[in-house]
Length: 250
Image 1 (spheres, rainbow, N blue to C red):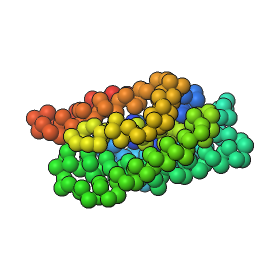
Image 2: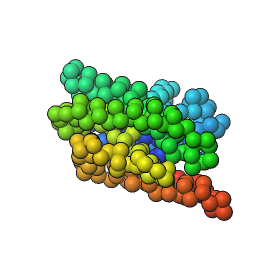
Image 3: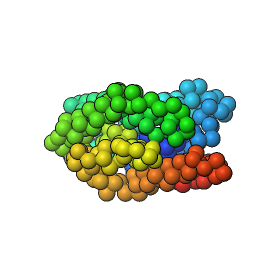
Image 4: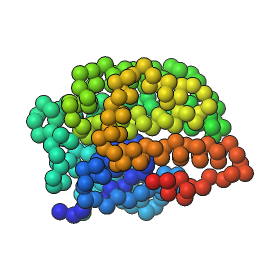
């Protein structure tokens, strides 16, 4: 079997989930950075690999696979020596992981991406404010997802699918960690206030950072560093954005 090749970018939450898993589980994979900041995901070279231009993406010989949840599950199933807690063999335990992976896209990711777009990225780039979208869709969707994370997924266990970390934790946690960029929008809610009412979510994130170490923290500590550089360049036209400096953060 060919060595898997993972295409990713550190400012993409689903990409980070796959990269963290590769590092934390010691998977022998080639990881290639596709810089979204440079537009490489829309470039001819990457589109020849993945015509959708989306990240993350896996190639293994003539086999190709998009979507972070599917990639995580495939790696857990096919790579040697992966501890079973990442993706359990037991049908019910695995179903719980699969359920969380499926829940992510229509709830947590929907709210997070929309809020960051309308509340941070578009305003700092000078686009017209879409406060109605923020207040009527993005924030309610995100808050409902965070509440479900607190009161359902983490209600009785340390991790979303049980008492040990799984691939589902990575996909969900990277989405929550991306909310650190909220601090660069210049108005509330920021990252801390968004999570203020969810002590189990905060404890879960701290638990993941402690258990997974630098495989987890290195990528997430880079988010506010990148955010500060991007915001400075947008606000100061005499300070052009140094994309190479951002890409080299990790």
